[in-house]
Image 1 (cartoon, rainbow, N blue to C red):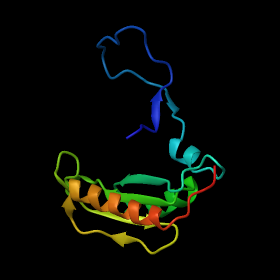
Image 2: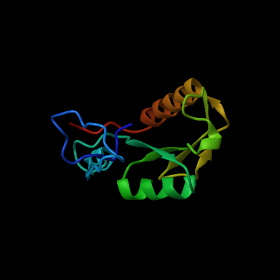
Image 3: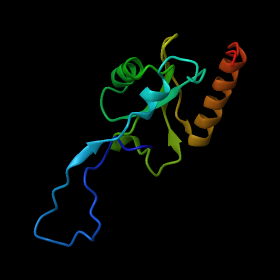
Image 4: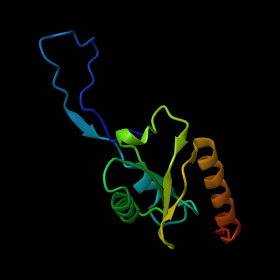
Length: 132
């Protein structure tokens, strides 16, 4: 995943060990999802974002869908008790701008990916192509 933040002034030298952690100023990275979602002739027919959340998964995913302007959000709970990072399974919710949220059962990550690809194919087959 793309990080939301980056170091404002990267050091050209090794940051030496000192007493206490170094202070790092951060700068916001460009919002790729919001940029891709801007209406116009270059916008993809389907823009899907991902929301890794630790609190209020559905609420935060819905807000992200609205503020970013994308079509779908695949949201998942990445709080410590879910064991998503490093695990083989995941439980996601598919949040769409045109339908009620879908909560998918706990599945292998590869099965989540396969289901998502199948949904994308079905959606795009039913969506007329935009004339170039």
